[in-house]
Length: 274
Image (cartoon, rainbow, N blue to C red; front, side, top):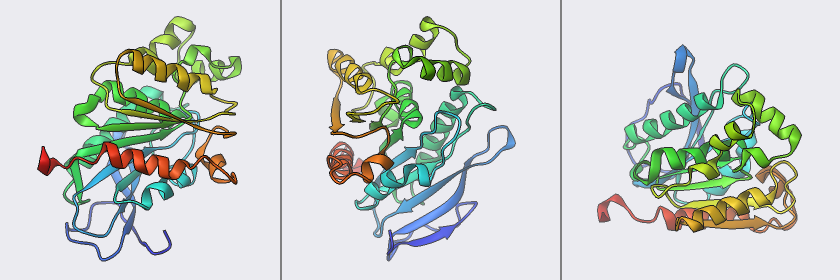
């Protein structure tokens, strides 16, 4: 993004007008749960739009991560197309539960819809993109919000069956979720929440993911197909757990164009043609 202009802001301080160049706007407050501000960065392409938008949700095991470095390859992948993207921070453990993070994802979606004109967003074309814990959050949002609020969801290395993860990962998940046992973990798993109202889903997963095995994505793919829901699975050959790892590989399986092309296809229909 070397040709982009970068700005910092705490509030929306710009007017809806064509940008001569792409703009990167940073430190924009999108919600204030419990009085603590949550921020996002926004990338707006040059031109009048309206453009489709993708909200990026970082990973970090529900305890860390950030909206910039943790998802840098995902931000870069979407910066090469005609997308507005938003990369958000959210509340994490131990001070908060994943349910709070889910509320923050919902708040980000509503923020984008509410400020669609300022960011040149077509509010009928909004997608979610999450990695690892962020992938879990966007998959749950797909079930919770449905295709009326979000039109496409992509998950990178996302856990889908919490109860089948490795024992040490299960222990971690039980701790951050405040849950205990298989029954509770099943109820909190994305695969259990597959439903007819979900938007199309893309699963990107490394074949050598040692944290969230590929079988997690394969199981979710089969579950969605069994419900006749739109789902695509793209496997990164020899890939590990994160897009940061994939970006360093000599042959990453081409995940940036796969991601861009899929969102382009799924968010192609403009509100003017509805």
